Image (tube, rainbow, N blue to C red; front, top):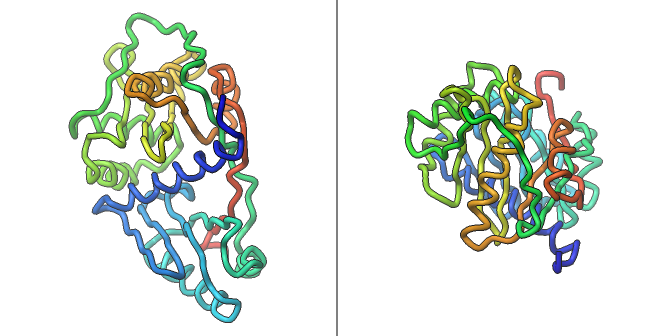
Length: 267
């Protein structure tokens, strides 16, 4: 890549935070923003989808505001969420205050980037496997079915997940993809175009058909579309399961998405 590593790290994080802002546009979500704090609640029971995104507090107010925030999230039925601390977070010792309130520091997932002009696109899938992008509610239901299964989410959250993305429509900058095997949905992914890069999210393969190249194929499809529209950089946040797959495609690990997490029921 002819772009500095630090520029790419900035883009990986910026795409993620713009993605969260975009999710906050859905009627299903609750996005709160003030000069002191910014947070997002989607209602899906996963720490990746409920966050405190920005903190600009004073040393005298930080503990009270952390307590208020934990209480509010709990009142909304959110028992797991993430609290991001960036270099400009205030107060400077915010992490120590979060630990004192029972949050845990997490070595986050690898932030990875790839030059889309140099993608390794070698993947073999059976002829009965096809990929389509979601264009209506019926296909979104199929996408949700795969995503909930693949990520091990409780089936009871399927309606919440559907409502979150249905509330955002079916046009770019966010687009969902479904892979079908013999006409049945088995794999999912999501493309988000933001801050000049193509972000990949929600790559999920149903447990019964893993290790057959479908995850690679469903990741390549949105990256190719982004490349065809002029994007040259792809970014994603890798799970342990997907890391080697993304490396083979040409992605490089450039940072860790470290943050704090809370499990309110245990606090």
